Length: 420
Ligand SMILES: Nc1nc2c(ncn2[C@@H]2O[C@H](COP(=O)(O)OP(=O)(O)OP(=O)(O)O)[C@@H](O)[C@H]2O)c(=O)[nH]1
Ligand SMILES: [Mg+2]
Image (cartoon, rainbow, N blue to C red; front, top):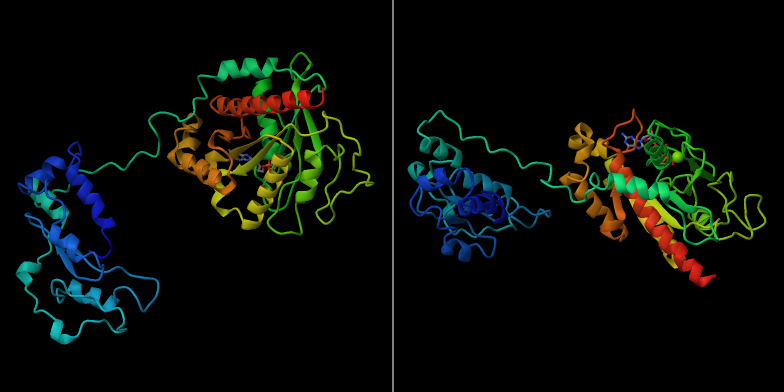
C-alpha cells in the first residue's frame, strides 16, 4: 500500500464498526480479523515512516506500508523502489533511501520473488469468496448522503412568524422612519437580486426593481440606490435596502473601499454614480455633509456567491474585510448571505428546501466564517428568486431578513441611548 496509516483507517474503522453492512462478511474471513487491528510490530517498525513493513493479520491478506512520496525529489520514497515493491523485490523492514535518485534499493538487497507468498488477495476478492461466488461482487456500499438528516437551521417552521414579524416591524427609535440595510460584496454576487427576492416574497409575485445582469465580469449596479419596499396597501415597510456597486478583482474597477465606508456613515447621496478611480470627497456633488441617523447604515450585509466562494481573490477578501473592520468601528452589526446555493449544490437545485441540509453548503458557511471571522449564526444561505416564484425559496430569505431587522433594531436602540 503506497501511503501512510491514513489509508488504513478506513478498513480498520470498518472492522471495528459492528453495524457496518460488510461486518458479517469481514468477520467470516477470519476468526480474529475484526478484533485485531494493526499488528503491534507493524506500528513499531513503521514509526520512522521509512521502512517497508507488513501489517500482519491472522487472515488471508496483508497490507504493506511504505514511506510516503514527498514534494521534494530528494526526500520520500523513490518511485523505483515502489516499483520494486510491486514486483515483490523489497524485503521486510527494508529502510528506504530517498537520497538515491535512481531508487535506493541495490541488487544485494533484492529478495527473490516468492510468487506463492506474493499472490495478491484484494479485499474485494475475499469478500466475493466469502459470499460464495468468485464471480459475485461485494454488495454496493452506498456513498454517504450529501444531505444531513435534519436541517441545521430551521427556516420552514418559522416562516409564518417571520412573515408576521417583517410585516409589523417598526423601529423603536423614533429618530428614524426606516431601518437601513446596506448590501455589499463582489460583483455579480446577487446583491440586487436579493432585494428583488425580498420584494417577491413579500409581494407574493416576481419583482425586479433592482436591475440585475447575467453576464459576469464588471459591476452592473453603478449607482447608490435606496429601495423602499411597498405593501399591497401602498404603505411602505419600515426598512430599506441600499444597493451599491460590487467589488471587482482588480483595482481599476468596482467600488472603492473608501466609498463603502462613506456609505456606512451616510455621506453618499442617493443616485451617486461610483467612480472606481476617485474616492468621494467632501465638496463633491454626491457627498452629503450632514447625514442624519436615518441616512446612516444600521446593518451591513455582505453578499457572496456559494459557487465561487473558493475562488474569491485575496484582493476581494481584503476589501470585504476592510469594510467589515470599518463597520465594526462604527458599531454597525454585520451579517452575510451566501447566494447561488442552487448553482453550488445539485441537491438544492433539485429541491430548495434542502438548503440547510446540504453538507457542502454547511462547509461553505464554515469556510466563510473562517475567512472573514463573522460568527456562524450571522451567515445565511439564500437562493435568489430569479426565476418563477418558488415557495421553497421563501423561508430562507425571510429568515435572513428577520435577522437583519433584529440586528439593525439593536443598533438603532443603542443609538437612541447615545443620542436621546
Ligand atoms: N442561480 C442563481 N443565480 C443567481 C442567484 N442570485 C443571483 N443570480 C444571478 O446572478 C447574476 C448577477 O446577479 P446580480 O443581482 O446582478 O448581482 P450583483 O451582486 O447585484 O452584481 P453587480 O451589480 O454587478 O455588482 C444575475 O444573472 C442573477 O440572476 C441565485 O441565488 N441563484
Ligand atoms: Mg447589482
